[in-house]
Image (cartoon, rainbow, N blue to C red):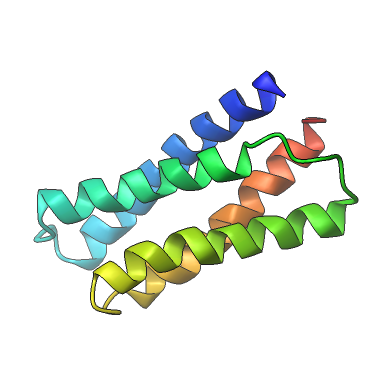
Amino acid sequence: MKQRMIESLIGGVLLGLVCVVGASVRSGFTASPVFIFSLWYNRVILGLVIGAPWEKSPRLISLARGALFGLLVSFAFYSSTGFSDPISFLAGVIYGVILEFWLFNRGC
């Protein structure tokens, strides 16, 4: 399970970087550093939650779990922005699925 946590955290960091680039471009590079850091950190937390030592599950259950955790973790960020960044919220759900898909295929 240690390998699952490491890979999930790395995935969260990398997906966070993708999200930061996207948010920066969408804002015309005017987003505050605090906003950008918070968005990146949210994705790292998503990696931490998904990387927890969950029991082996069928693929569909794993992907649903990723979507659910993506929704829950991303909602914290979304609500803190005054519900003003729905794209990042939806991306968090997709990132949760991506992380679970990656971990499932790696046998973690």
